Image (spheres, rainbow, N blue to C red):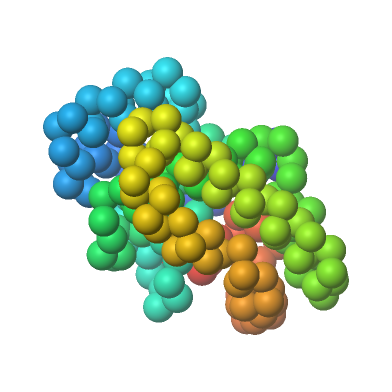
Length: 190
């Protein structure tokens, strides 16, 4: 709930683009008509509460996407990725929105502020694995199992980035002095 209470940080900013609907997002990432039809139907039935922001992040870091709130995600349009990978990122971040709704992301931020790598690594791995499994499962359900199987190692690369993510977050927290996780995200990508 804390995310939503602080969401005004984004609403008042002129640099945040408007939400895009799922059809426009799929058009932007060059999805085929067949994929669009099945994905739009699935999204409307399962993720309609999730709003999508699709814009170029203002960072040199390779951030593909992020969760903005318990009902919105942002996808970096600067990345040159296959359509299926964009879908994976969207689904992965939408699972993080669920985790925020459940109150599981704020403690993750707090572990970095407290310089507690052990607790961070446990939380990071659990949250990322859950989001990966969810995204892969949906893609398989939608008939993209060949993509998932042939790219499994790349799709799960984030699981071995714990130390790197911790160090980047620590540096960004020191440099940007955010009060919470959503402010860190905002200051990092806008």
